[in-house]
View 1 (cartoon, rainbow, N blue to C red):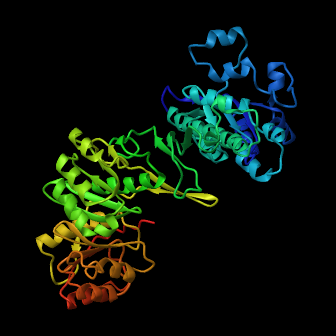
View 2: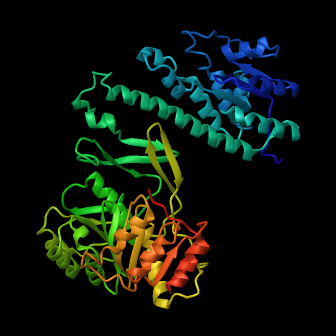
Amino acid sequence: MTRSSLFIRRVLISVFDKSNILEFAQSLIERGIQLLSTGGTAQVLIDAGLPVLKISDYIKLPEMMNGRIKTLHYKIYAGILGRRGLDDAVMRQYNIQPIDMVVINFYSFNSLLMKNKISSEEEMLEYIDISGPSMVRAAAKNYKNVATVVNSNSYEKILDEINHCNGLLSLETRFHLAVKAFKYVAEYDNAISHYFNDQLRNNRCTTMTDENNYNESYHCFPKNLTFMNLKFIKKQDMCYGENPHQRAAFYIDTCEKQVGSIATAHQLQGKPLSYNNVLDMDTALECVKIFDEPTCVIVKHTNPCGVATSNTISSAYVKAYQSDPVSAFGGIIAFNRSLDKNTAKTIVKRQFVEAIVAPSIDRDCLSILSSKKHIRVLECGVWTVRKPDIDFKRINGGLLVQDYDVITDLQCLTTVTIRQPTNEEMKDALFCWKIVKFVKSNAIVCGKNYQTTGIGSGQMNRVHAVKIAVSFKEQGMLSIQGSVMASDAFFPFPDVIRIASEVGISCIIQPGGSIRDQEIIKTADKYGISMIFTRIRHFRH
């Protein structure tokens, strides 16, 4: 331990959740540590025979207003906020004892909401803790001089450190406890905020008027949201959600300014963005960003329907459009290069488009695109490599949280068949593998010469996804002969390989990992198809 370690002499305890508090307090007493406590907690400790100084005796004032006022006193907060070596004189002057650790947790507001569905607003208001969060914030702010404990799960580790270090607690431990404390208070405040927002939404509070800016949209979608230490601010209300009967809003992350994202893009013209526009544009932009050469991605209903790479974005667009002109109608177009005048002319001439997004838009493009005044045109800026972040989805009664699926290093690709892929097939395999990550599973992407020739998405079995992808040939579109096929997950049966051989697929890239891998590899060998294993799956639900 260093000089920054804190000797624990006096601990304030005030807990609603009293799990393991007796054992913890007993261990502190055995080390000669003095305990201060509020009425309810103090009584539990006294009943167990532990020596406790009641806070009401310490501050010489009783608890009042039915317990609303217990610890709101300068001797408590000065004891917590006092800086050792700096505020000692004033603390002696007013007979203030330094408090080295606060052990505090509050009423579980979320649990109370679940248990008190029929409680009145006045009853719920009584559960809102005032002094507890204030003391926790004060102690966490002063973590260099005070330890803050908000969870009974921390008791054992704290006791271990105090016992092994002769009553000392390290600065590192106090800092980590402060981080937990601030998060705990934020979550508690969020629960109360959500409760009050529900009252507005349910028209429980009728005194707010439009002239005070409390409109119906605000009630449902507040200006600010906090989730898992991420802070979001409302960018705009949407005209509606996925369907006209659903209300919606668009929030952006204020913690991390993601230049080159839909959230920070600047709309240059066109109708206001819809909820579905934002979803489709995000898919299109995130897909096109992973390509280095000039590339165009066309998305429809959150699935790429045409992707191509070429020497210019104009030719890349033409190739992407040719991949599936039927699905491209009313789609979203994304580029990884500046949108130029020639490409803008080609788009307007060829198709109806909902929105276009590019890192920059040549200004002479706008006069061309403005002839179709409803086309949304967005300039997103030049992006950098996406930092690791989280992805989450709401389900009924819960939330799913995961790491965002990033393309990982594929230097360890394994060819598992006798026939090796040609250089061109390998390039097309990697091209298709990048795209399949953005297609809803079960997902199949076929392509050749840096152009998709067929995409099968969102099917309940992989065979149907393959059949849809290769059906483009039957629809009189691009020839699939000689294409590479990418699958987002392994093939459970060899039937897919036979279908691929019938339409002229020459190479397949897939994760591998099926119990029938050897049978599938033998089938590929039988038809002279080269097969590459990535050992990485890209489900997108």
